[in-house]
Structures are given as structure tokens and as C-alpha cells.
Length: 357
Ligand SMILES: Nc1ncnc2c1ncn2[C@@H]1O[C@H](COP(=O)(O)OP(=O)(O)OP(=O)(O)O)[C@@H](O)[C@H]1O
Ligand SMILES: [Mg+2]
Image 1 (cartoon, helix red, strand yellow):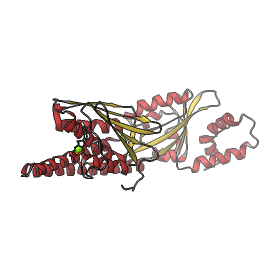
Image 2 (cartoon, protein in one colour; image 1 turned 180 degrees about the horizontal axis):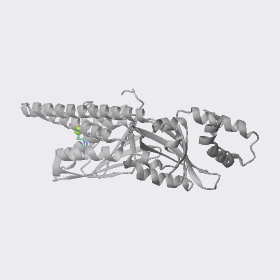
Image 3 (cartoon, protein in one colour; image 1 turned 45 degrees about the horizontal axis):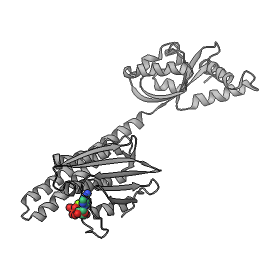
């Protein structure tokens, strides 16, 4: 590119920028200009300056290529809004206005090239004072179309995977319930009923995992709510659950299914033993932060019991203890005016990927 065209496309903002950063006393303006012009013209990102009224003041070569312009004259002095996807124009304009009044901002938007190609862009913008004293937007804008497409493909795959897990769990629950109906002994029927309830609790945990925006953690409020609703659905009016979950409490994904199973066992026990002749047992479920970790408390108003460490390993509490160990937590059972079970998960002892019981 010739000196004159470089100066035409880049000289003004560069001088404004240099003035903005160092004052007017640069030591070697010509070398500085050339260096910056070289950087601006070789970067693969779009660098542009847009006046407060939305007209394009400058755009580098990479930017012109992205908007499918042959030369700067196709856009110089014209509104940049025609290049912004209609659905993103309002946000773009509001962000531009904020930048021109002093904010530094980043945002994403759809770009429509002059020949009709659509791209997804990510822009980082800052205000810049122009030589005439007006404030314009200086932005470095990156084409993230490929990344967005990869994210969309990944999301579609994950959705499909979740869908299959959900279907498989439903099918598994259905199979167990069918066996339960055919069982001849009461003991077998009970065992199969517990198994299908456990599968339902795991399915509830999976539902909470799908909805998560964050891929590593699950929202405690949603997880607890889903499991309680599932257990409530199984036991009906014999069980009244009141939940209290602190805002923003999140659990590691790996802890979601164990916590759902633990809660299922505790609620099932409250229903089975807490009513003791009454129509209904009242259970309070609380999830909150404690020091650096989390505490889940399940409290019923039943007769209580004397907890023994050496129960059947396969029984509900045996399973609970094994799961608590697996997720590196501690369990405390207190029986006084009902039963209170507290599960503590310290942040440092939350399970690491691949750990086992
Ligand atoms: N919330 C509770 N209130 C009163 N007693 C309880 C409560 N939770 C447990 N228990 C007592 O502790 C015993 C052990 O419970 P656990 O869940 O380990 O086994 P289970 O409920 O008998 O069998 P499973 O869970 O395999 O169906 C119960 O039989 C019951 O006597
Ligand atoms: Mg039990």
C-alpha cells in the first residue's frame, strides 16, 4: 500500500490516538506512523473508526475484506448500520452511543457484507478523540463465525446426548416398574419400587444438568427443586416438603447425581418412618453456603431414631454414606424432635474428576 493511501485511511486516527496516549510531543512521528500503519494493515482483525453519527471514518484492509468492499470509498462517510444485521442494530447503536460517551465495551453482532455474506463478529471498542475534538468509536472487530458454528454444532450434539440419556432413564424406570407389577413377593416389589425411585431421582438430576448455562456446575436451587418435586410426585399428600435454597449456590456437576440420590433416600425415609400414624410428615430441605463449602439439611418432624453406623450397606442410609464418601463430604444425623440430617461439602473436598468411592 502506498504512503498516501495509508495516510488517507489511517493517518488521522493514529495521530489522534498518539495524541491521546502521549500528548503532542512524539519524538519520531514518521517512524511511529509507519510502524502503526504496518500493524493496522497486517492484522487479520477489522480495525475501524466510526463517528458518533454512525458514519465510517476509517477501516483497515482486513475490515474492508470482511464487509466485502473493494476500497474504503465504498463505505467512507456512509452509515455503518447498513452492515449490521437488522436484529442487532438497536444493541449496536446503544453500545456505540455509550462508547462515544466514554465507555470501553465489548459485544457481539451479526454483520452483513456488501455482497450479502453474513458473519458473526465480536468487537472491542473504546472512545477516541478526533483532531476536531469530537469523540468517535475506535474498534477492533474479530470474525468469530467459525467459533459460533462450532458452538452451535456442539450444542446440537449435547442436546442429542441429553435427549438420549433422558429417554434411556425413562425406559429404565419403565422396565423396573413393569417388573415391580409382576413381582410375586412383597419384598421384591418394595426393592423394585426403591430402584425405580432412585432412577427417577437420577433423571431429575440430569434434567437440572441439561438446563445449566455453566458446563461445570449445576444450580443447587434447580437440582433440589427437581428432586423434591419428583419424590413429592411419588408420595403425594403424605409428604409436605418446604425448600429453602440460597441464591446462586452451585454444585460441581459430578456431585449432582450423588446429591440427588442422597436427597431421595432421606425424603423416602422421612415419608416411610416420619409419619408414624399421622397423615403427613413435614420436611424442611435447606441448601446454603457454610464457610467455604455447602450444607444440605433435611429435617423432618417425625419420631426420630437412633442411627447405627453398622446398618445394611445396601439400605438407604448405607447408600447415602457411600455417596457422601464418594463426593468427599461429611454426614451428621441428629435425632431430637424429629430427624435432622446434615450433609456438608467442603469446596476443597469436592470430588475431583475420576475419583471413586
Ligand atoms: N427420618 C427417619 N425417621 C425415623 N426413622 C428413620 C428415619 N430414617 C431412617 N430411619 C430408621 O433407620 C432405619 C435405616 O434406614 P435405611 O434407609 O438405611 O433403611 P430402610 O429405609 O429400612 O431400607 P431401604 O432404605 O433400603 O428401603 C430405618 O429402618 C428406620 O428405622
Ligand atoms: Mg430407607
